[in-house]
Length: 141
Image (cartoon, rainbow, N blue to C red; front, side):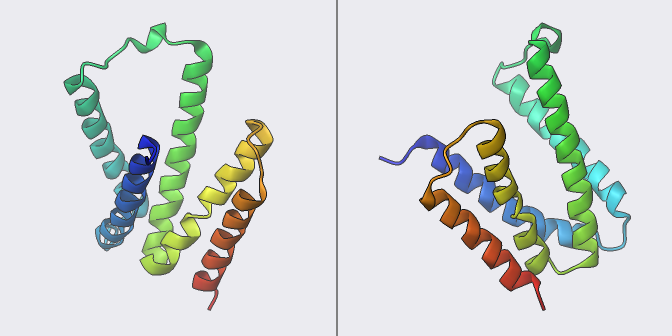
């Protein structure tokens, strides 16, 4: 039996691929910061619609302070990532930008090992090394 999270992770990867394609086309002739802003508005409306349609709205003021703090930090990191990503797409080919962007997977692994105490076993470290190697092979001329 395949764990449910695998399906969501594959969906995330597929939509990230579409993000690179659509983003590369979308940043043509427009400032990358403006493109990121417009993208963010659409994400806000789309995700808000899902929350309301599913009846999952909660008053943010009732959430624990730690939750709000880390969601804010995550949002700031996402915004910085998106600004960098759209600028990179504007300056470089999507076929090279997207794989380098996926080094975020390796950063996430390292941060999870350090700050969340997740296990750094040989299989996980080997997979991370292959991601790095693949990004380098693709990105270096």
